[in-house]
Structure formats: C-alpha cells, structure tokens
Length: 423
Image 1 (tube, helix red, strand yellow):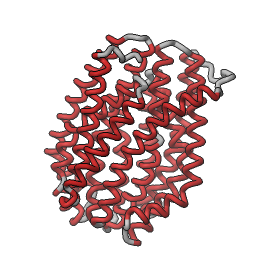
Image 2 (cartoon, helix red, strand yellow; image 1 turned 30 degrees about the vertical axis):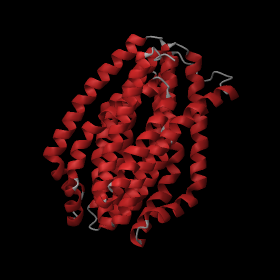
Image 3 (cartoon, helix red, strand yellow; image 1 turned 60 degrees about the vertical axis):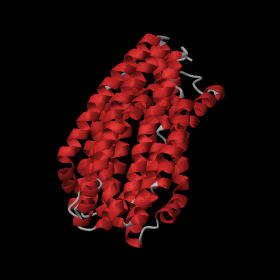
Image 4 (spheres, helix red, strand yellow; image 1 turned 45 degrees about the vertical axis):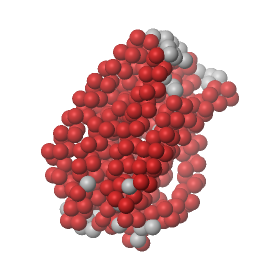
C-alpha cells in the first residue's frame, strides 16, 4: 500500500514539473488553483473509499460474502450520484474560484481551463474510490498497486506528450488526467470482478438495495464527509489565501505541497493497511488483534516520518529546482522549506490513527477530532499569527496536523481503557 500511494503524488509532481517549466508563474499558479479545486471536490468524496474499506473489512472478517457484494453495489450507486451532482454544480463552482481566490485574469483563465476539463472525470474518479476501498477491505493490497501504477503511468506519459510535444499547456495536463481516470475505471472493474470470483463473492446477488442499509451507509458517510470537508477547508484556505498574497506565493506553496502530498500518501499506505487489519480484527471481535495492529502501524509510521524529514532536509532544495525553473518561485519555496522538513514527524500520528478509526468505523470520533483541530489548531493559530503571512499559514497547517493526531490518540486510549474498542 505504501508503494501504491507513493505513485499518486508522483503524478502531481510531474504535473507541476511539466507546467513549471513553461517559463511563467501564471501557468503554475493556474494549474495549482484549478487542480486544488478538483482535489478538494474529489477528496471530499474520500468518504466513499473510507466507508467502503471499513465496512468491507468487517464483513470480510465475518466471512459474509453476500454483504461483500451488496456493499460494493450500494457504494458504487452512491458514488455515481455524487459524481453527477458535482458535474451539475460545476458552473457555480467556477464562479466560486474567482470569488475566493481573487487571482488575476491570467491565473484564472488557466484555472478555468483545467477545471472545465477535469470535472468530467468525476464519475470515473469517484467509482475508482469505491473499487479501491473494496479491494483494500478484502486485503488485496496488490490490486490497488497495479491500479495506481497503470493509472499514473498513463497519466504521466500523456502529460508529457500533450504538454511538451503538442504544446497544449494546462489543458494538456487536464486531458491527461481525465483519460487516465477512465482507463483506471476499466482496469479497476476488471480487477474487482476477477477478485470477487476468486473470493467466491457472487456480484449478481439480488436484493442488494435496501433503504435501511443505504441509510446506514449514508449515516457513516455523513460523518466522514464532514471530517473530509473540514480537512479540505483548511487546505483550500491555504491555497486561496496564498493566492491573495500573490501569484509567486501561490506557485511556491503549490511546489511545497507536493512534498506534503508525498508524505501523506506514503503514510496513508500504512493507514490503509491499518484500516483493513483493524476492520478485520473488529469483525472477528478480537481486541488483542486490534491493539497489535495499532502498535505495528505506529512503529512503521515513526520510522517513515524520520526518513522523510531527513530526506527533505538533505534533498529539499534540489527537488524544488527540479519542479520549477522560475527564479522567484524557487527563492520563495526555499524560504519556507523548513516547515516541510518538520511536517512528516508532526503529521505522522494523524494519518495512522485515521486508518485505525476507519477500521473501527468510528466516524463520529474522526469528525469531532477534525472539528476541534481545525477550529483551534488551524484557524485559531492562524488568527493569532496572521501577521506572519505565509509563515503563519504553514505554522497553522503544522499545528493542525499535530493536533489531529493527538486528539485521536487520546480517544483511542480512552476507548481501550473503557473496553469500548468493539463498540
């Protein structure tokens, strides 16, 4: 799962590197703004993957083959409905981009171009979340690796071809991602169908639709959605406030956020494994196995956090120059690099315990942790230190990540002490 997730930010890094070498900051700022909005929308739909993984892992632990098939169908139906809603709302979302960012016309034009193309990949992207979550839930770790490897290989090749050789600029990056998303959907459906047959799961099982079951799925997804909404609110605030400071700051933050994405997806690889293992253990009603997988996850999380911090300290400045050749963006990004060096250690626990709580399907606890951390750790800190401008933004993000982990650790320890891990 770590290998699978590392391929995701590599795509964003290639996008940034290709666009970052077109010679002007407005291209990079434009794709940063447009892709940020797409990321917000698709990440908000991350509840589809998380709820699917948690519920499927528990059904897998109970060896309930009928429920495994029903969960897949119900989740795919929900994903399709959400995707069509996003496409219908896209004209309003475009107006929101201009209102919230206050970016100049050159940047907005590129952002609109990217967004107008990428939004039509929503059906594929959201259904892929469900299919990915289902594979994780049944402990098929190689499936997501194959899926993401194929997806990102297609995307990267098309990215370079459309942008560098056909000179489509930002539109080329958008078309590359859209084609890759639909390629991924076809491949994911093939993998899941093959896996279901191997597991003895009959996907044609009737009576999978139930109002009561859909209501339960929606309830779980509601709390994860709120949690994801608050998370994306903090990330989008960083993007849009950076745009208000200036296009150079926006472009520099876009470069540096690739570092954070690299960390998050790698640590999420450990978290995804925790979701599957903890969910299975809960399905088996085994407290000892839950505690064992939490300890193993924490060990690996600390190790990778240290590795990333050291790697960024040694190679961070060089990586920045690989991502862009615009001098003012390089100087700006280098100035804020120390924040990125510290983040792997500060953020490690929040990623890991997100995975634990997904496996336990305790979405309300995740929601409450996120609300508290955003209110105090992010917006509270930024309100106090807003005179620091971009340094204030990075301080707020660092405190936010740290507080998310601390609050989830406290809740986990409380559940363990009160023998409530199986509730």
